[in-house]
Length: 352
Image (cartoon, rainbow, N blue to C red; front, side, top):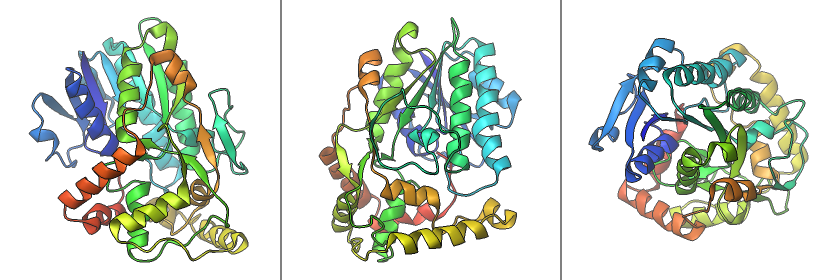
């Protein structure tokens, strides 16, 4: 098949390109003129197309003759105005959907997120499946706009144009410089990551990039009647004790483990103060807050997901276990010059 990958110069998008090439597909990569194409240009058979989710004409060029769209690009940072999140996550997805449908593409695979279900007052939630509803209110603008985009994608499903949404949680692996893992490792390298757990285990589901790619490729080829108009959680096989996992990463990369505990009342008061300050448009649009309710929720809520629907409908099975993934991550970090090279670019704004 001929596939289009958005966000192809980023972390997950780059791995989607690799996976599609290994599967024998022709690959077109939607990239911005300012994107770093150094790696994509080394891959035989990849056709870069310059464009932007805000430019409908460029999207029409990108989807011409394409069978499958893997839509990975998104605004995933923890700051920005409502207009910024809506433009990138909702309006951009709507334009791409329209262009793909009008061009005759048969399948649209949307990389969504479990964050689309995150409400401000959620507690621990274990074994969540796809029957869980959207909340009445969302935790932040990222969660709200990912939910809105996901709803657009699923509602667009129709005969001849199959849409499916995947919800990988906590994507990690080699070539990530800006996701949650390098950011937390970077904090541990400077000794600046306190233990926010409140002294209790925090169980989470994570998703290695290999497993996310496997799910996307299988969802692209599954029978339309099995997957059309449906969302799916995608995770690693293991449930992870998050703070024990971070302590292990500190050992792997020479950081200081998060042993200094912060009382929940102090933590929550600090978050409230920061978020009040970040209501100022000048800050919200340009600068990442030092802490947020969203980040704290990810680090303190036990949240795990069932992949039984993905296993049933398109045969999803994780291909990379956590031990193998950690070994490959360590080898990659060593190959690029060590932990500083792994974490340094995490301080810049990126899109997935």
